[in-house]
Image 1 (cartoon, rainbow, N blue to C red):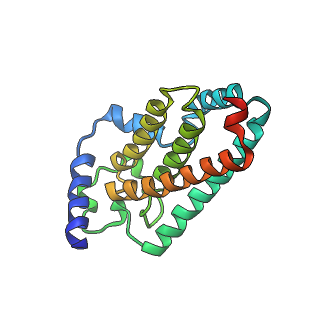
Image 2: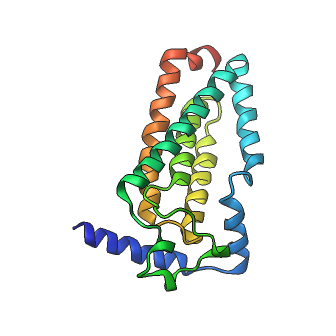
Image 3: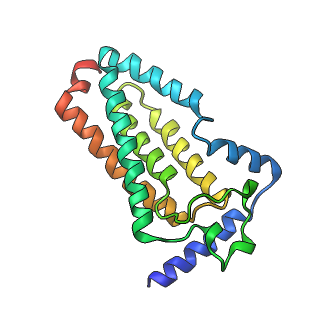
Length: 190
């Protein structure tokens, strides 16, 4: 059963990765860089400051701890499952469109980019949705864009993304409910 799922995952990866052009090579290479989205993060910071005012530092501390946990957990899972990234899989290396010959670490399940982006998106969505009803569209578009960039660049399989989404979703919800229940921020600020 797992072999069939893995076979489908590889076929889907090869299909998605095979659709490329020079513009999107540059675009997705740019998107996957954590510093490229600083303007986006500054907008989110502005919304957090506007919503939580003097309690902003609590949200930022929780967000930093969330990213630390999600990133370290994704690395732990990579080292536990030891599933090669597509670009390290000798059976399909010749079929992969690898942008700028950047492959990354040996293992790819689960994607740290997918885990981290989903975790922060869920966390911020749950904290900001009452004040900014459409924030979810922006946050989840961000998660999908970052995640797809990893497939496009030849660095991760679709299941690496989905695994990261599940872990990030659970962590994002956990941190949001923890901060809501322990610090009581939403009731006092929204």
